[in-house]
Image (cartoon, rainbow, N blue to C red):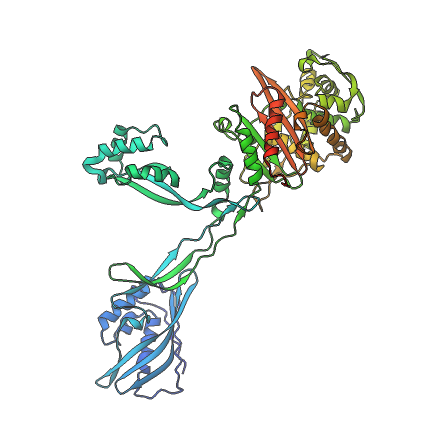
Length: 607
């Protein structure tokens, strides 16, 4: 026998039930005997399924206890609906039992199905439900009820290119001071808190802290600490009256020295993508509100991990290299074939002024001769073998351009002038280019366009057009008004290596938006530049890189008022890089720093 019961309205005590509820009653026998407990059980289940707990409870031998338990179950489960099914019935004389199957419909399309047994008793010829907690669930004890618990969604990790984690789910710890809880010990507590937290906030003052805490309703938030820092101060202040330490779920770095600023930016960018689907449980709760048993549990589903292009081996090698100097130093490494950013390293001196490796703009010095030489080749002004003058000094317009130390090579092939870094040669070439010549050429190498990279703020550089002959002459050897970031110069080197400007990216699956003109470079141009850049290492200004593999690049020393910057830009295999020491002087120091990075990579490393 199958009976369907529907209800258009529900008692106010079960306001959560907003849809039509159905009870399916399937008896094991085709036709129940008229004196059996089935009709009473059917009525009980029908009332319970429609949320009419009073009507259901009226069919029990202890109606008050039944009504209280049924109401608590509906409320604790936050149930939307209930299906009840009779599986079988048996009785003898004045006792019986009904095997049931309940399917609770819970929030967020969850459902919970289980089987149990409803005890029946006949008194004075009338069947009633013999009420016990097992009428709701076979494992529910007396003075217990059911409750739905939501579990936080498991968070995904963030991995670097080789697969190790850089961000994992963890905790930060908020430290606060509660003046009311501190009571008469507020001032001593404020002094102890100030002393303990001074390494993290040196502006704390005990008197002012006590006053602020007293005037703040609730605890006064002070600092948020990492696990290690929390552990360091907890022994001194954790047990003091009024000190509140609260764990706060957060993605935390696995290595505080691994590109900390960049990893923090990645965390902000992907934080909303890391939460998986939350889990949930149905528990039994005792009369004191304590969870006793788990009746059903559905674990949460983690979101897919997120991958970034930083490579631990390259990042670590680059970081170790920049840490060798006290001057602001930075290295950016890009994979030419894909545009993946393999490393962004800068030392603490640079960190104090922000993300200089990707946002800092500096005159690039002779590293910009890569662009000038490429422009000259594309305009048919010269080839690597064209004989050009390299005098010690050259007057152009109102500017006397000197070579470093005044060296004079006479007339040499452009490749030799490039390897020896003849300022006069490339100043003269630039002077014959149109006002926008170097601007257009620079954009072909990635310098000038804007890149909106998920998780990384960048500025490639600025090469403004100029009608002023003197300025254009200076631009030709990386002085003048040309400004480029280490990121921009690494992109230029990656362009030569790849034969086209790669689109830089950091977070897998996130596209980079590029705005600005980026015309392709003719194949013949990069084919000419590559051996010229190799000559810089084998027989030019970067001889210190001999023995570091097939490195190709260009040195640079960019003058500014009060000193000069030390540069090296180049590539090896599928790894392009730019190294800068701000105010570092001769390019040999950037060369040595870059060599330190290359020497620190595993011998078999392949980008």
